[in-house]
Every structure is written in C-alpha cells, then in structure tokens.
Image (cartoon, protein in one colour):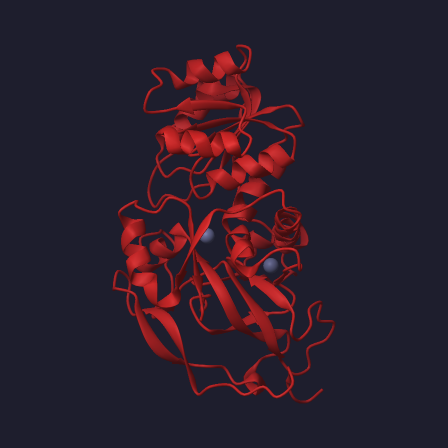
Length: 362
Ligand SMILES: [Zn+2]
Ligand SMILES: [Zn+2]
C-alpha cells in the first residue's frame, strides 16, 4: 500500500485545539495546532480522533518540569486518552488494530520491542521509549499520532470516559498488585485508599481476592473504601499508632504487601515496619525529590522486598482494561472539557481534586 489508509470520506479540519505549555512552569493555554496529514504518518503510526482524556498528577509534573527527567517544550500533555483510529500510515503491516476501532493511549506511547528490556517484557523500561505528553505530544489534543502496535484496544463493555483513567491510574496499581507476590487471602495495605489511585487499587485487590487494609482520612473516604470492599479501615487523622493498628488487624504479623502511591517519604518508611517477614513494598508514587529512608537492618532481617513498579506493559494494560470492562472495577471521575484544563491544574496543585478528572473533546 503506497498511501495511508483512512476511514471513508475522512475530511480533516485545517487546525485543531490543543492544551499547550510553552515552557516549563508556564500556564497551560488552549492553542491552535496543526494536524498531521495521514500521508505523513510513518509505517506503524496511526492518527486518532480523540474522544476524551484523563488528567493525571504526572501531567502537572510535566507542565512544571520539576522531575529529574525533563519533558519536551512546547509540551502537549496527557497520557490516558481514548480515541478512534481514523488513519493508518502507509506500508503498515500486521496491524493488530483496525480503522474505526476505539483504542487507548497510555504513558508508554511506544517501545522499540527489540531492546533487552522490551525482550524481557519490560516495555516501560525500553531504552527507546516514547512517553505520551512528556517526550512526544500527548492526549490533550483533538487529533493525535500514535502507534498501532502500542495502543490498547478498548472493548465495547466500557465507556471511553470510564476507560481513560484505567490506562494510567488503573494500570499502575493493577501491575503493582500483580507483582506483589501475594496470594488470595493475603493482606494488602493501601495508603491513600480513597484517592484517585487508591480507590482503584482497593477494587483491583478485592477482584484478586486480597484482603485490604485501607488507610485514609475522614468519614467520606471511610464510607467510599468500605463500599468498594475494604476489609479494614484506618483513619490516619485519628490513629495514634498505624503500625500497631495494622499488626492488630493481621493477627499480630503485619501485612503481606503495601501499594504505596503517596508522594511523602514517610508512607514508604512506615511500610517497612508494618510489613510481615518476606513482605513486599510496592513503590508506585513518583514524587519529584523525596528519598526512601528505610531501615536497612529491618529490610534485611525481615527479608523485605522494595519493588519499584512503574506503570505497566501492553499486557498489563490489556488485563487492567478487561477487568474494568467486566464491571469489577469502576473509576470515580468527574467529566470536564479540554478548555477547563487550566482550572484543573490549579485545583490539582492545591490538592483540591478528590477522584479523577476526565476531559471530553466536544
Ligand atoms: Zn498518569
Ligand atoms: Zn525497547
């Protein structure tokens, strides 16, 4: 095929609106931006008409440029979007996705699938990785170039809005649980259980048959996590001894694993104390400069594993979406418009956002 393939009667507008950050720390602005001509797509690339996109705390880090690894500028952020494939680049062979199909774009936009990390299945650690909304243009756009071998097919049983945050928040906590080396019946501690990542972690953990100790603050969060199936609740604003409370809940032994998504280093240090022998600390949060201050003595003496778990590969995304599409995991989100993004960043920076935010493109 010497020309790109497109959906029937495709007519693209001259320009599109995107949410753009001109330089690190600049205010996000809605700007006109060119749309890639389908004929300019490289083999393996596809053009998506975006339907919606989630907003993640990572997007705020990207806009501020405060991480040790720097993003491109000008930057179009966003990495948990759902769109429809409207064009596929010429000379694309063996595409696993079709024109008109609904697919998800995640943080790992593309991997080479040929380096050592890719060969081992660690596509997220690929040496030639492309990161959505960080090293390439992201999902805060109406039209986006993506990759047929890397997008996540979205099954019919789930809406685009419900799928959006599964592509980052859901995927991240699902993989952490998958690699926590726990078995059904084991105790998993989820600090921040009522938050954007935490409330998904509670649901995936319950789906996987784990018993959940949910830590968060306030009656509203308490009610939410119990509704989601948590087995034990600890209010950190009231507890005088969180480690003691966890020991008590687990018959004196401590938990088998913790999925720590918080940005504070104390959440990590504490886990070493409340995990039982051979317990696993799944470190998931990406704070800009917090240090992990663990007791080496007790890490060794208790044979604790500290496992950095970074998003997930294509299979993890496929599984996370399949579980959500089955109805077992539901993301709580509020829908806004792409043009609301500056306000969303502002609220996020002030810690005013409780669940997840999904921006619609219409
Ligand atoms: Zn994210
Ligand atoms: Zn690779």
